[in-house]
Amino acid sequence: MRRVILKAVEGRPLLRLTTSRSYAWTGQESLAEDDPEMWQLISQEKRRQMEGLELIASENFCSRAALEALGSCLNNKYSEGYPGQRYYGGTEVIDKIELLCQKRALEAFRLDKELWGVNVQPYSGSPANFAVYTAVLAPHDRIMGLDLPDGGHLTHGFMTETKRVSATSVYFESMPYKIHSQTGLIDYEKLHESAKLFKPKLIIAGTSAYSRLIDYKRFREICDDVKALFLADMAHISGLVAGGVIPSPFDYADLVTTTTHKTLRGARSGMAFFRKGVRSVDKSGKQIMYDLETKVNQAVFPALQGGPHNHAIGGVAVALKQAATQEFKAYQQQVLKNAKAMSKSLIENGFNLVSGGTDNHLVLVDLRPRGLDGARVETVCNKVSITANKNTCPGDKSAMNPGGLRLGAAALTSRGFMESDFEKVVDFIAEATAIATEVKTKTNKLKDFKAFLETDEDVIAKMAQLKKAINEFAIRFPMPGFSDH
Ligand code: DSN
Image 1 (cartoon, rainbow, N blue to C red):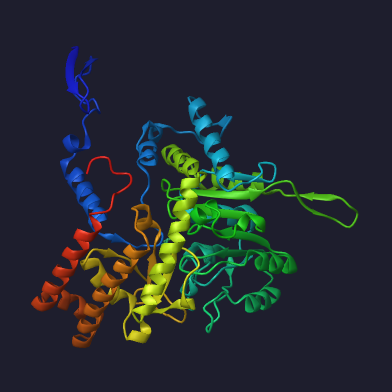
Image 2 (tube, rainbow, N blue to C red; image 1 turned 90 degrees about the horizontal axis):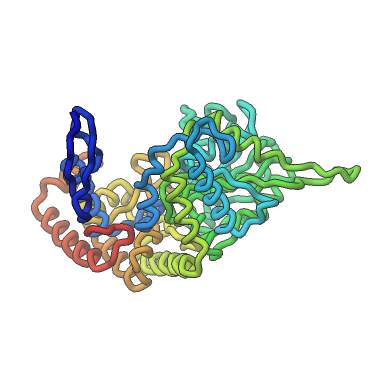
């Protein structure tokens, strides 16, 4: 039987849909109509983001345009393979989208397409890294990355004395390098010494909680000396690199990976860049060419992934267009200024910072000299609408109860925060820390600390007052990406 369904679609006139189906599903209901429970939860999360101070260094607020692409019909399409060589029909538009994303990726980082290529299919940064490893390494080949407690990333080979935690350390042999205990900077001397002994096939320059610039030239020299490939994982800082406000790893690395949603402010995804063209010239004058393109592409698909997330690739392409603008450069300049203002203000408030300051978008506060830890301060911050994460500091043994708190400036800068606003943010952090100090003196274990926060009326009132002040402050700033708040 043919049925007629009349439906209003987002304020437009009634849509007349004819169908011979015996069921009524049209897929035209809004989220609020179709799934009020999920709609409610998303509304709550929107409110949380708007009313809070978002200081997680790996987060940002993506544009409405990129979110539109992310929530588009591109979600529906399978397209295993690469542009022009797909395992599915109907990919003619998807091919154009992927090629556009590749082109914009090279343009955003000012790369010559004869010398660099990019794979935009990795689902995120961790898969991009693992794809690169499997592209250029055999099982049990050796790698070196910055140790996790020293500000490195899990995927750079993290293992403890008793456990190979990251799959990278399971499938490859990993030896970490460290930061210098006095300066808080990467210990290049020791890295070089260890590399000469360990003879890694790949050295990774990349960080998750390191507030200083990376000396890519030094990494290149070390890699050349021990004949290792040089991978830069610029996930945290790729927006700053695109904005041209910090040194670029592309001047020295063989391979570069990144996520797309941190300082780069795009849809959530990953990219892997590889060098092309001449790698070196041998003694007889023969040119040795890079062979990374096929290796990386094959590692992403078919070795590790299936269908690309075309909606994410669309959202990344939109963000990459933005990343090539003067406006984006100005945003990144402000991120640096705000991080410096936050750093200065924290020091003035008596906080210790690993390395004593920042040259990028983040600071790492070492709470140990104040008799505190990241877990306790993070818990209080969370209760008063300051979102930050506990983080290991050099020397820490536990990632669950580490000594540091990592604070990033990228997200709030996207909401228009300036230096004076970050000074106010630090005042709020100082108040939250004072509450953590008070409660720490009255409790023993972390469990007791958390229970006290839930039950002590005096502390509950103090936190409520602070939360109210923070919410009233934060809500004044605009929120990118939200069309309906
Ligand atoms: N987990 C991310 C971070 O917060 O740094 C990196 O993948």
